[in-house]
Image (cartoon, rainbow, N blue to C red; front, side, top):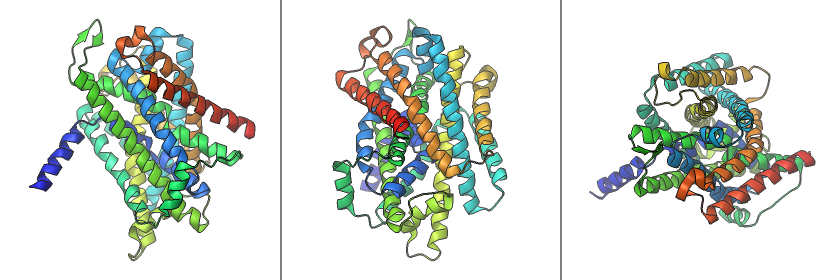
Length: 428
């Protein structure tokens, strides 16, 4: 009876989650897994403190972004188009599409390399398979069904949390690294800091979450007054719970990925991850004691990368499509059929297939994941500035402007990411 009651409570809580959970989970995409694993392998537990600091930064930036969509009934690019210089918007959207395409390419490469651990088919075949499958799923499946599929794909990330508790992690050392920052002014250290910031506080999430909140309003047929949705306090309460839960889940998983890689790879002298099978070694503790533990770890790693890739690539392509469609004022939205939003779905397909081509220019898939995160870290700076301005503009947000505490955290995020990006340029 108690188990049934608990299960019902879990189901009820999960029913309240949606765009926030998917956004947070999509942040732990193959690029994120690769970057967090590389950080743990290269620097051990010494970067744990950054995970603790990034959590409130991520929660606040995504909450402001999502609230903009809820209050206005428009995506971020639409707001920028209506209220700011269009050339600035076009510049931002161009680099958003560029960064997302690179990220998609890196994710596809990681998925293909991981799939080869399961079935040793040619790399090219796997990349083509994943690209075609993802585009067809995003175009064919109705939004309500697709949103549920994305939400349940988040489960694939739980393997990393389980692994950490089986990896004999020195928790005292981890706690010390969480509370006592260790900062090094070395090129490789600053580069990985920018990559961690970029893969955690990612530009594509700024566009995705507000657009998905708008999709939710459309799906629930919210009434509009003067072109703006009428949103109840319960709706905002649901949004805050969803956003907080999604970002917390994202960072908890990211933290465990990093410390697991630190405990398994770094402590065994592996400081640079160059292949998917090498990254899979971080999961060996999960199957320690079983015959052929290494092979089982590879299978778990492959399913984790493929699951998160299936979740994140549609988010990457979708956020690019929302940005382009809103900037050019053409129909957009996953809730619309293809014939009513051809340009929107065209961007999704185009960005995904362009990402495919990146895999044939000779870049290592695991390294590409980290470089994609660095690009996101640099691009996030001007976008966060725009989000802060929009969130604080009473003409746009009315009485839902960003509060003082959230504004201070957002400004700190802007300064921190700008400083890290600048330091990366000068130290290199």
